[in-house]
Length: 599
Image (cartoon, rainbow, N blue to C red; front, top):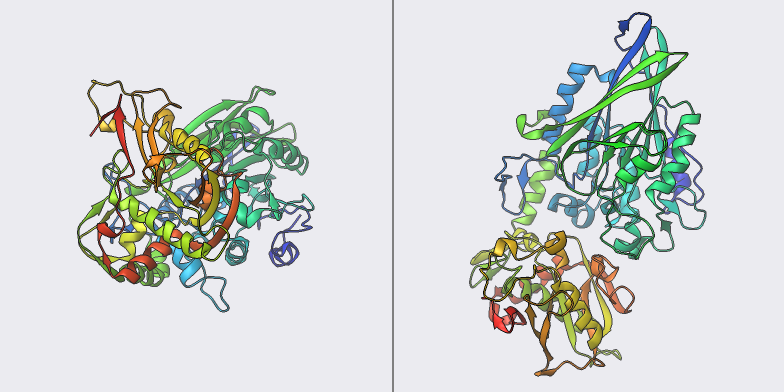
């Protein structure tokens, strides 16, 4: 059935309450070339896919104020992807191609922050989001919702949706009251074939259940996010019964079968391969969320024995996935004969001048914004060693968080409690140079759009929190050589799931087994009292359970705000004028082995 976008948006309002099932039939494409083989009729379809674009329009690093470069020679940006898409369409015939994305579109760079917060698209007469403008110009057919789509709240997401010429799909993003889809679950496009019935291709969009944790403040009571496997099992048979000859899933979910949130949700975070394995009737899955490159992964469906092909292009528009699907018409119906996939590298092409012209003005505004000078640093601060040494640059984050929370709780019953704070070494390359400090310098230090929350914890809970954080280090016996490149990320834990905690003093003994590493834990010069109460200044990702740290998600919330921690850092530096480590640096922790410092 046809999808009337305006009526759908009016029905869905803010939370999508009461939305009926919705699909979309594309306008008839030009007739495709027929390839004969005896009396069989054949059709070749190419599905292109991106994912985790995170606001990358151009091959530009806003934090370095220069062209993006890495050691692998990658290039980034939708402008490069547009060139690749044009090449594929020229080769295959645009009428024989489909262009999809698997989510995380409107968060991730100063560009996306600017048009969400500084010059917001939600303002009356506000701008068109650069990602909507670019993706409309490139001609995307459908995009799955990513978890980061919800970072700026539902109003911003709905405005972005309104500005897109394509549907945002989320079969498992349900209205919390009606349990009906709050966004279109699927999209159907019909491809005309010369001398044969048309080919109907259905795209099912699935998003990540972790949204319920990571953006709890925005979605709790409004939206709910059941598991991908469960919803795919519901929708794929419906799409087949509607006449879909091909079913493609665009899933903002990795393929590993793992979850970062432990048992906090009964649904798997990275379940794309499980969907392929458990749900019959799927031909291909465009994978997202994990930020890994998978040119082709073949998964056997447990019930049918058929092969499902998965592909995940590298994030930030560095790759374009290509699924080549061959169909044959026999016994009165189309059937998929084969599927193969690969990825194309965006470093192999130049920017599409059409996209450059379209978005240069938006880009230039943001470049000017991030280069504003807000203070002066007395010395260079860097995160190069921050993951294994207590670095002053991370202390800046915790100091700002402590100050903001203390001011917020002044005059309340919690004002007399000690305030401690957490922060993670997000980047290994961030640097605040001596001399003039700009917004982009500070933004590179805190790359996420996290906001601040105050929680109430006991000393015992803080100890357990630190023990869990210390699992980040690889167990290293005393006396053995220390290789800092092999010292961290035990069990593949990312840097952003290792926390400093300020306001305390403690050692992390990496010669000990995980769970028994925190030594000499003191507060205010004395051994930590397990009954002592603390106000814990923590980012919203961690406060809502991100990283599965103990106690914090269930702890009493004392205060929260919607202003980004990054903005609070900029305000703090602006007010000070001078960024001097003596105003914020402290030595709270160190690594030891059997009591002897590692460094």
